[in-house]
Amino acid sequence: MPLWVPTAQRREFARGQEFVDAKFKSFVQSRRATPQESQDILALLLAATDEAGQPLSDQEIRDELSTLLIAGHDSTATALTWIWFLLSQFSTVRERLAP
Image (cartoon, rainbow, N blue to C red; front, side, top):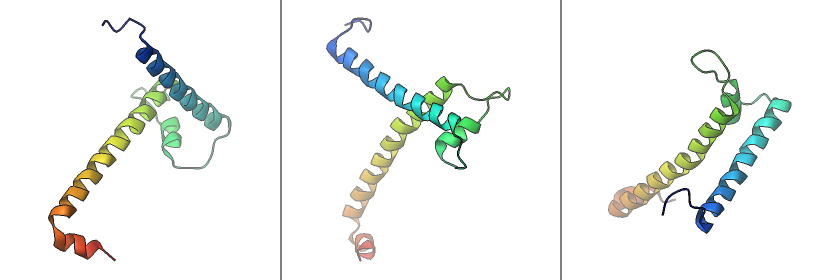
């Protein structure tokens, strides 16, 4: 099926993407309206500049936040999977970790 065909699954995905985009936009607008002295990822992205010294656009900030949200949980889940697997294979290490 071509990607331009509006199936129920694609409409549901688009609604979810619009929801996430609206949340990110709300976070960015809120932080710009009331800047905070913090070092969280949003503050760092708002302070970042491109190669020409220009601040990142809202779209660039949204793209970075999306990447961190999606890639961040995937790599953590993969690391934990391997940790549990390796601990199941090495009882001496597992015993040293137990309280």
